[in-house]
Image 1: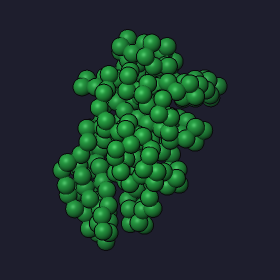
Image 2 (image 1 turned 135 degrees about the vertical axis):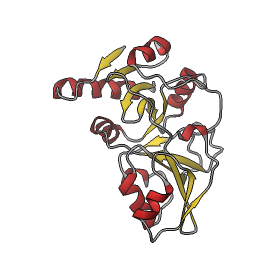
Image 3 (image 1 turned 120 degrees about the vertical axis):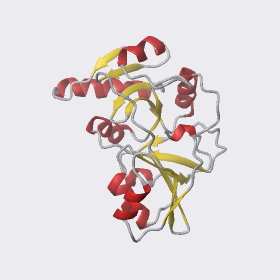
Image 4 (image 1 turned 180 degrees about the vertical axis):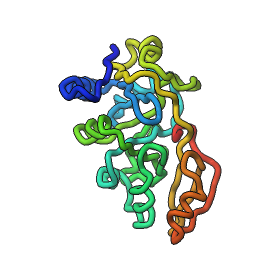
Length: 225
């Protein structure tokens, strides 16, 4: 089922949010539009929901999916404490184009990795529609709206065509091209590690935060995209 999102119609928007929340409560994936493309979302702390997401995508891997949070306060309920320097970077850029790798507070939390990983990937958004869902329901597991190995689908109609019966619903907002890769960061011994340079470049970060030492690395999970 495709529901078209109309941000100018408050009543229609409430109905769409209610539809997304209904799918999440059932443990089913929902496709939603974001500023960085269409994504699948499901409840982040529901192992059954993550299994449904993996089944829909034909994803049999054991790599954790990114988790979407509304703000740093919500993140800190699931992650170890982070230094103030890192908080400053996140507060400036944490709007969909920056991904943070951070250690889990609960080592038994299955983010899709079968509880094998000590860390997870955290993202945020500035989209008011998605923030409403996050603030109403809590953090969400996210991944691109596609099957494993496919390019991301850019229209609600194509998502509905390929995933009807496998996901709860598709929230449509026209065609949205997939954004380029996010910049992925972590922290170690006071430094910020750039695990992958994407939309936000190392030079930009160094200019904005000259007091921080940024170190560049290259290896990163495909799911952090």
